[in-house]
Amino acid sequence: MSAIDFVGGPPLDIPRRGNSVIRVGLRRYAGMTRLDLRVWVEGGQKPTKQGVSIPLAAVPVIVERLTAMLASSAADNESCDETKV
Image: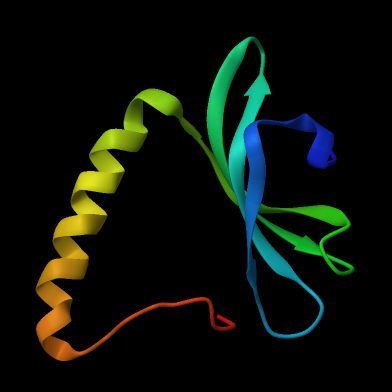
């Protein structure tokens, strides 16, 4: 797996503690495009088994639910920007 495997533009890297990132991007697997969220180590050079691959058809529902969750948590003043998680 490498950045070359991603389609639809470069993946998003979310920094984590240590020398790892959560990489979010679109990948082709078995002829299908899927949303891949995975932990990469060694400065984002090596993928791990820690992650999920989600069918693209499920992404709009996930976005809708996450948007609702963020809106309801806004009153609690919780936000997630590009900080280390």
